[in-house]
Amino acid sequence: MILPGLYAILSPLAVGFLIGPRCLVGLLAGAISSGMMLALMMANAGGAWDNSKKYIEIEGAKGGKGTDIHKACIVGDTVGDPFKDTSGPALNILIKLMSIISLTVAPLLEGRADWEIWYYGLIPIFIMLFGTYLVYHYFWRNPLDITAPVDGAAAKDEENGNGKEETADAKEDTEDNAGGVEVS
Image 1 (cartoon, one colour):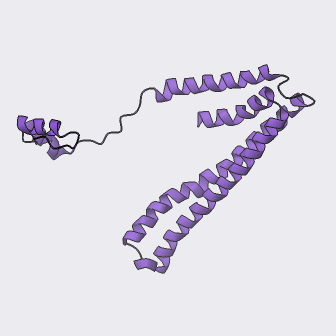
Image 2 (spheres, rainbow, N blue to C red):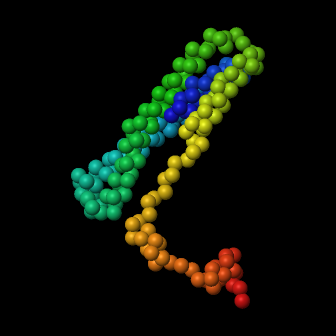
Image 3 (cartoon, helix red, strand yellow):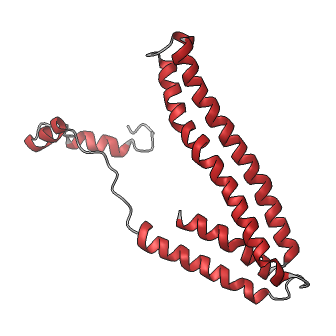
């Protein structure tokens, strides 16, 4: 959440100072139109997934609880709740944040032509790049180990030497047929 916030705050500054006020208006128009459509889609889709689960549970439609359709609706509800409750409203806040930052910067851009003070626009860009580097360095550089633990029975078989072992002939056949072509 560090980088999206950093980009949301600094991108209007970078565009406004680097290119000019007309481009900043275009950035805001694009952010408002795409953000509003995405927020409405997420809110409506989340509500639909939530209501489908309730419909199956309460009305007993499509076989009711315990069916495969009910299990699928539970998964859909798991995805739909964050859509409805967090993602949609968060996009509205993002639009407001970008608009407020732009309105705050507007007096500094008043009466200026495009590209007139472009060098000030480099400052937010460098801050965004530096912030991206810091987040990579502290959070993303060492990936998490998310491998599943080995089953206890399979681990014991491997320790005892009872696991599957390939013979030398089987290994040669596998290597020869790696391309999927018969070797005679």
